[in-house]
Image (cartoon, rainbow, N blue to C red; front, top):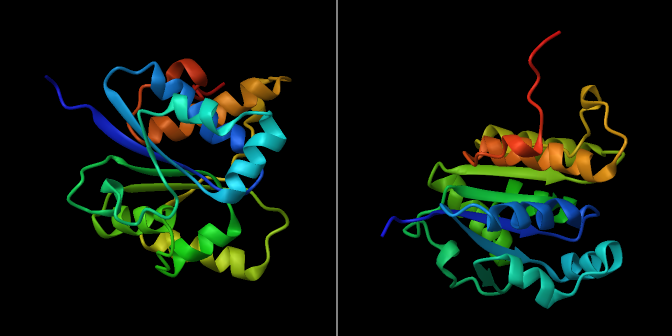
Length: 191
């Protein structure tokens, strides 16, 4: 039996729950990947408000679900091998926790683990406008090796559909993690 590659998807209370959900939906179709989900309490509120989706429907999309306060979960240890973690969407509170090593819940602890193990960390922050604390926290995460990937649409795809714009961002982020997600986005080939 071949060991599946593990990827952690974390969903926080920032607007944009569709990003994390869409990642889980896509990973579900990828036999070589195992998804691990963590969602914050505020993330659950947005899931219901933005997508009219239940907790149980979300949990069905993930291979493994971890509780937000389960800091003894497998993904809280560097000895549990993952490709990394994507926090999508990433609230400014979670960004600050990651930037300052404040592992008070499983999302910030798992992010701290991937940073210390030199694995991939991608944050999709959702807030505008940004204040100086947000910008400094983004710089701090970048200096530690994380990637800040705001979910901004690529207009060269000329899409007018929100679902296509979401898929473009999701595809690009998953591609950065090594997931073959080219069916979700069109890479720029030049003019």
